[in-house]
Length: 311
Image (tube, rainbow, N blue to C red; front, side):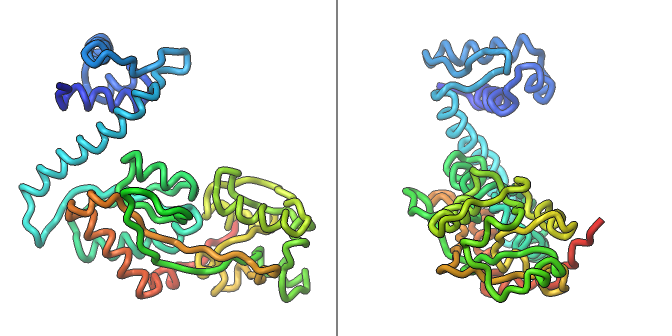
């Protein structure tokens, strides 16, 4: 039987991929931590790490145990919180992953609303590529995922919170100079494009659309940050294809303009997803329900955010 202390030691080493870093974080000696890992591997009869110059890299068995360890340690932490807290004043940390292209819409309104409703809850928010959110959710790295989930997954409960289309976009004066009412996918290759990396589902959707119309994108730069992409466009460095809702603050103030995509265009459905069993933890359900409520109000606070200024 693995005790919780050993499990927490293992999880920290797996996350840090370093005995020395993990030992410093945990406040124990490197030799004691190293021996704890060796004893754990001996007790279960499985190698959990590959020892190499790049550090302590979890094996397949190690990655599986890490997913269980995160769930167990989070559940124990929450058990203490649930015992201490009353129903009217929940506390604790909720780990949320939000797709990069949707984070500008949701992050600020969510923080503000959770602070108003549940002042003792702490949100830990990570922006990630759409393709990574699902893996983070099922591995236990996050408890709530907000992203595109193209396929229904076992044990995952998802609710649609937004549906919008993609548009060709850039700095207002550069869009005006094109003198176009619509951007046909076959014309995308004629312009320098600022896109997210190839692992991002949004990037793959745009590339597939262009290829169906005999076009290859002219990628100027890859930026896995909605903020960074907007800054690059406002600096006049290039164009992009972005969900319309995520561009609304900059579009409403005139900094960035959008052209609809022709050729059938692209649409997206954003969902908030949790593992079904995690909804038994009240703090997770409350934050999930808050996200759903915000969607019904059109994420109103996002409309009040100031435009990102160039420079």
